[in-house]
Amino acid sequence: MAKLAVNVDHVATVRQARRVADPDPVTAAALAELAGAQGIVVHLREDRRHIQDRDVSLLRQTVKTKLNLEMAATQEMLKIALSVKPDMVTLVPERREELTTEGGLEVQLNKEKLQKYIRLLKDSDIVVSLFINPDLDQVKAAQWVETDYIEVHTGPFCEARTIADRKEDFDRIHNAVKLAHKIGLGVNAGHGLDYNNIGWLADVAEIEEFSIGHAIVARAVLVGFERAVREMVELIHWGAGWRRTGL
Figure 1: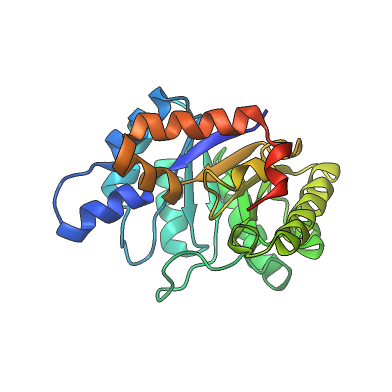
Figure 2 (figure 1 turned 135 degrees about the horizontal axis):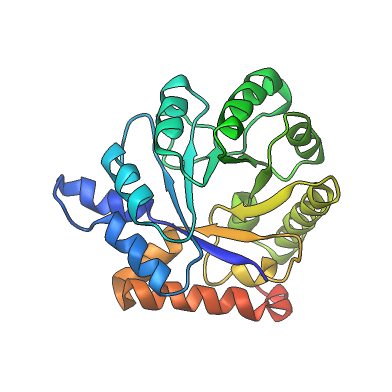
């Protein structure tokens, strides 16, 4: 049964809008764990637009499940990761002007660089994941660079406007995760998942964990953080073949 890892970046987004102390993503992470989340995710960006270095340090001290640090493959971020030692690092592409991560890593064209970073992280007992598009060649390249996990980019699937498009994207994701599992990679998935579309993927056996942030934070504004997390945990646990008949 897949786990839920809650991304608390957008709690920090609200805080940074006023440059004040609240809401605190560290407190949100604790509430998420109490509500049943089995992991916490943060993306420390180069421009520090939401999560700050202090947040990462405090989360390392307080998270009791698993801390997954998303970061670009840069020397600055590598130094931080080796110092903080999160349970997992997920390497992601990053462009300063983007609102959110827009696509997966180009692993094939950056094999040597990524393999170097992966080896340094693994030598420090940090599990490594690569955020990639559901493309079979990218999955094979991920195996070549010796990552532990992939996180499949579910953005296009979530943004599909028709049932036919969503089914096509679902099949693409399903084929990618099956191949990854077959060649020995762990599989996570995330980006754009919400309370309406999670059912399509909740019963895909090869997916070990879903990383979900914005949808939970948005719902938490209306119903509270613990309830928002509990409701997502329940949807994942139920599985949902019945969801595949609609958007």
